Length: 97
View (cartoon, rainbow, N blue to C red):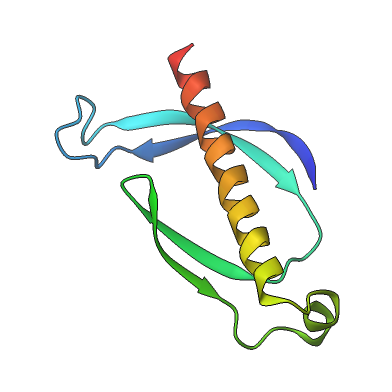
């Protein structure tokens, strides 16, 4: 994966009780260039904690060859969740600067 740059995007704030509710905000986004990906799992969060995790049942033949143990799938999914969390922290810290 290669970071090709940062750009601002305009989004409408629909957060309830927000001081900027209904207003357009400019937020920074990182543009990534990466090869095509295959979904291994999907994880949903509620109030900062994992509420649901769905591991792929019909894995691609190539993935099955590389990952033979379901525990490895769970560890990879946890790692992915941590990476997303770190990315969100980075975005929040850049907004606070």
